[in-house]
Image (cartoon, rainbow, N blue to C red; front, side):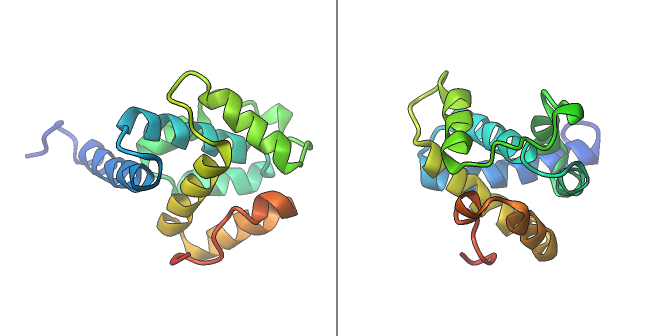
Length: 145
């Protein structure tokens, strides 16, 4: 029998913990910070993607992470046309203000690496290719990057 009564919940908790552990490998052993950074970076990314591509990415995320991804979602404001890497980092830095100090560049690179590792390679390439040049440079070229 499932620990939570539903196998789908157990599976998404297990997968989410794998993602958080990988983030903690880079950002330090703070699960709360890892969860917060994951959500902040995913939302900053989501808001810069065309709606269809953003929805396709969301569909590939584990159920719990998908909830963080869609938190505060306002599709009428998408995509965010401010495409500079500085603005992208400022969005992340503002989102991370409430926790332990983390460099926005480090948070973005770490989350991008984990997402690229776990989603379909073709989807990863589509997301990467849709990003502005400076932001695209943060996304790993391949799963092993």
